Amino acid sequence: MMERKGAKDLERPYRKALSWHAFYRGKVEITLKCPVTSYDDFAVWYTPGVAAVCREIAKNHLLSLQYTNRWNTVAIVSDGSRVLGLGNIGPEAALPVMEGKALLFRYLGGVDAFPLCLRVKNPEELVEAVKMLEPSFGGINLEDIAQPACFFVLERLQEELEIPVWHDDQQGTALVVLAGLLGALDIVGKNKEEIRVALIGAGASNLRIADLLMKAGVRGENIVLCDTKGILNRDREDLARDNPWKWQFCLKTNGENLKGGKREAIEGRDVLIALSTPGPGVIEPEWIRRMNKDPIVFACANPVPEIWPWEAKANGARIVATGRSDFPNQINNSLGFPGLFRGVLSVQARKITDSMCLAAAFALYHFAKKQGLHEEYIIPTMDEWEVYVEEAKAVAKVAMEEGLAQKRCTLEEIEEEARTLILRTRRMVEEGIRSGTILLPPEGEKE
Image (cartoon, rainbow, N blue to C red; front, top):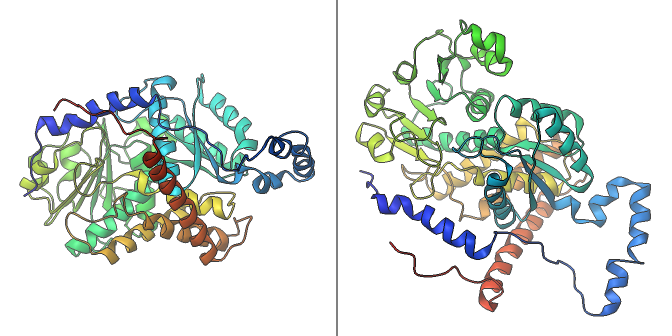
């Protein structure tokens, strides 16, 4: 039985976060990657020498991916309209999250990422702002943008930019959920082609999860989605009129045209995937008892899951996952975007496709399977850094096969570059701590 955590344990990350963020005044900074050994070096790195590089790029703008750090640089873009489970808190309040994302990009994937929180009036303005950024970046990571604007922004930018654009709340969440589900299904001995799935919440994450599950082999008629007004079905005239993105799932899922709310959606299902309102109490324990034998429960709302893991287990759940690092089976996007972008950037892919997301998901699954799947290990953890190398190789391979790579590499070259960049960051942090360049956090937290 999963151990119930005390209130003190659950609150510890919040207390530490305030103290540590104030101490460091931010999590990331710009540092140098080239040497400065004498005053003469400035004539090479800056004027007059840099003019030679500028002239070459002016002839062919793609050379910016060779002569500058653009090839390894991602913009993390948010308008702060839907941050974690906190809602529309604005661009300034979103900045700590985007800085954290930049930290994860660098430490886990060896990718330089810059948090850019924008004050925009509407989705069209956000699209135009990101288009202006394209010359400086090798990729765009959209983050914490409310729906339905997030769908519009992603579609427009994917069509109009020549660099990969990705919305982590959609594609990142979907690939990691799929990876965890594949591992969980192995343990309970069920086939993805036969399972019945309930998705509680019909926001950007769950809509993309449903889409990727179907592309991976889950039958659409066996999936139901449930939003705040009830189960998505073919009689939902409100969605037919107001939300074309949701409406298409009314047509592609729920083969029985089931109606009702969360309880009806969950009953008789093998899998429950919830990305909805932070809990606890959003999912009732008795609903878990109404699921099929050996149910799989992913309660992934942040910062508090829809149902506590120990409650789900006590009511029959065979496998439970959450979005939190302080419980087993963390379903966290940090397992997806660093490795995926590492592969995309290494071959200078122009787009990120669903095939690349599937490749990343299966890379995560196969890595965990090699380590040994069990009920509290259905997916790799973030400290297994080698998984990001495997992900990068799988994604880069698909990008080259689909003709989207502007740079051809062998898988051995991709692996070597990924290992070098990831280990370089880890060693820099270790050396910084040893030398005192990076200070350890203050002690004396009151428990």
